[in-house]
Image 1 (spheres, rainbow, N blue to C red):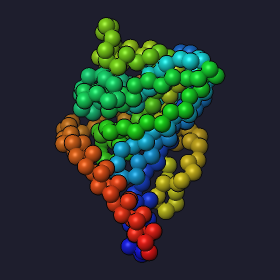
Image 2 (spheres, protein in one colour):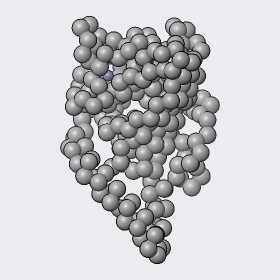
Image 3 (tube, helix red, strand yellow):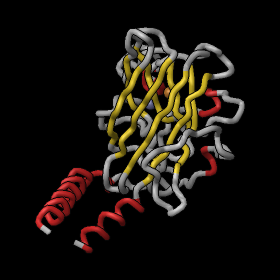
Length: 238
Ligand SMILES: [Cu+2]
Ligand SMILES: [Zn+2]
């Protein structure tokens, strides 16, 4: 019982949570009514990240591309300054489920009749763990005006941006932690960019990290699921 409790506590301390406060782009003003948050949660480096979007102020029943972009959004809230899609492996643009895609490619979401959306996805490439350039923390999250063609359109922009159009709103992926170093279960609102200084692509290490770690993710998840089951079972029995 003690051992399983300790295991459970260790898992909580390692978990990371980040939040994005979405604000309208100040240069286009096309998304002036957009409000929203994105919460990113990851228990450990071997478990897929969970991303929850809550957004309002968009057109009713409309489809929007959403991506993690390479750079942080500056305090001026110029979403264009967040640069191209987060793409540490130098691939072409794609759908979230594609083998070849940017790390930041999350495809599309659709709003309801009130112009709101609540979406939860998991992703196999985005991570709150690891060294730059693969870590998604402190990069910009962008909501686009149009549908992302997932790299399958007939325009020149298709292979780089999905031709998703203007940037309506954006915000930075900011880690949220509590005083003991673990993530809080109730995530407080992110009120600003919290002092993050935008870095440029050139400041990242030039060496590209290996992708081999991702090949074993399904077995890692199976192992962690088995561990959770074992812990649950142990608690139940004891
Ligand atoms: Cu984008
Ligand atoms: Zn992309």
